[in-house]
Length: 411
Image (cartoon, rainbow, N blue to C red; front, side, top):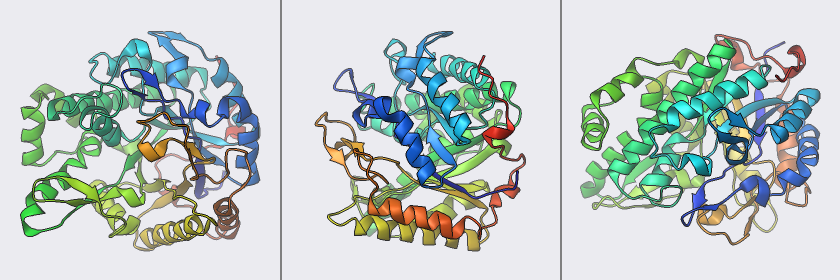
């Protein structure tokens, strides 16, 4: 196929547990289990060919080697029929009850088995995000005490982080055993911490080093000496650290960067953080990540509260797109852009910590599946740019293959 720019959206499939076991299943809250065919219709209506999407791990992965593929079989068969390319999101902030949480040392090997068996069942699938936002998942679960294990310590954070990133690396290896031209888009939150005073410079520097830990480990990059001491002081062994250095699959990876207004932070002298709003913006922060990893990039998540008329979200879309073009014009191979998500979300105003049923107007469509102004704007943006932008996916070592070029053969 001719290379093309990856205009994408996503169907939010977060499913962490909160309050000691309450499952927050966004696919259920947003009505996707009931309206999935309509949701795929909406993707087509927008002219979108790439969809961040995955089966609910907590109801699909029943135990080691045990699965309920019924929902995945239906949905992925339909995606293949429609020639929509899934970027498969296998783990989005939660694990099945039987697996416990991210403190479980068995998680990496068990998750790799799940990834391998998914790839065997759907061998036509090429694009994967094995574990979504590894840094955020470890932070919210084990440092802030919000999700899953609900712990608050550096040791719990390092434990979760090393298990999550090892699971991601082993899953990539397992998928490549099945499909040698698989590509992995690491959707990760791109962060920055601003010192609010001279006394806050040191804690801000530490946080700005810490933000890179998940991708440093995932890409086999040596961390700086202060972060090395931090990891070892909080439970990572030398052998565990060297596992990451010796198992880099960077050549199969695309650096996915997620950016919201909440990604930049103000840091006090005591090390406390508060939202700063957009100061640097997507371009500046993505350049920092690209300079560190030297990988093709993709803007894998953004959105904004719609506001009373939807104008705010439309202006944010235009701003983010201008930033993508600036990144591209500055020489970074950026291959795609994503408004996340297709439909409104529920309870993300509390970071899923509360089960209030609050609708968050962040989607291209509302929960009645009516298009929002930002949906109309994104549809027009795709029309305007899809033929103009030569895809920078030509920079990838392997081509992206559309579903119609692969035989549908679930096993």
